Length: 301
Image 1 (cartoon, rainbow, N blue to C red):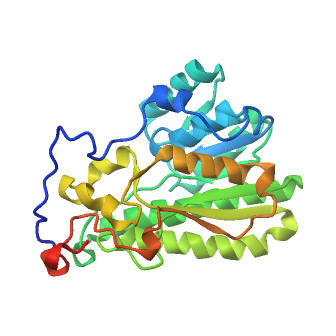
Image 2: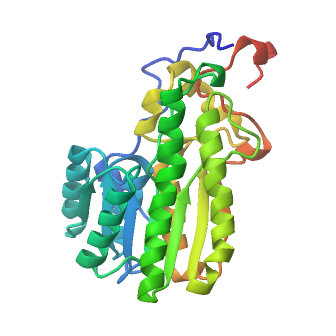
Image 3: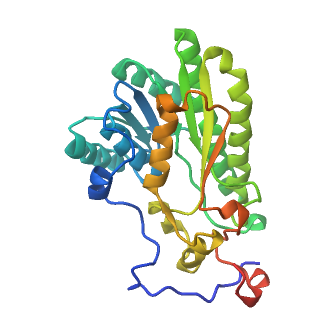
C-alpha cells in the first residue's frame, strides 16, 4: 500500500526542504574546529562530488587535510574540485569510478597512496536508494542498492585495510549508513544494506584492532542534500516531523562528525555508530514514499 499523502508544500515557503548547501556556504560556513586540525592527514571520500561527501571534502580541505574524492559522475567531481580550489587553494585528487567493481577499487586505493603518500582516513559515503514498497522491488533494483551500499562499501574497506596491513600503517574507516534500528519503510533494500555495514563495522573494529585500524559508522537522519530529489514533495514536507526537534539537518552536521572521527580526538572511538538525527530514533518513522493512509489516521507522522 502506498496511497497518496494529502500534503503539498507551498513552493514559495522558505521552510520547505532545501537541496543541499551551495559552494559559498561550504567554503565559508564556520566550523567548531581549528583551521589546522587535520593538517598532514590524507582523506579519501567516496561519493565526494555531492551531498554529505562534498561537504566532508570541503571541510577536510579547509582543516588542512590532503583530500581525494571519487564518484561515478566526472562532471560533479570536477566542479567540486574547482570549488574547493577556489575556497582553499588546494587541488584535491578526483577519480571517476564505481565502488561496485573491486578492480576499480583496488586501482583507486593504489592511486591515492601513490599520489597523496598514503591514506589516513577512508570515508565510505557513496550509496543510493529509491523509495518503493519492498514487495514491488525489481530484482535489478534490489541488487543495485545492495551492490553499492553493502558490497561496494566492503570492497573499499577490505582494500584499504589490506594496504594498511601490508605497509604496517594505521588506518581509520568512517562509513555513512542510516538509522535502521526500527527499520525503514519504503527503503527495505538500503535498510538491509546499511544494517550489514553497521554490523560488519562492529565486527571489523575488533578483528582489525591488531592492525591499528579503527572502524566506525555515522547514521544520519533527515539531512538536506541533493539526494532529496528522489523523494516526492509530499514525503519531504513532513520528514522533519519524524524527530522531536522537528527540524532538518544539513550536510555540515555530518561533515563535522566525520572531521571529529578523522581527528586525534577520536583515537579511542572504535566500533561505534554515531547517530545524527535530532532524536528520530526515539520519536518517529520516516516514510520516504509518503505516509500511506493506513498509517496516517488522525494525522499521525
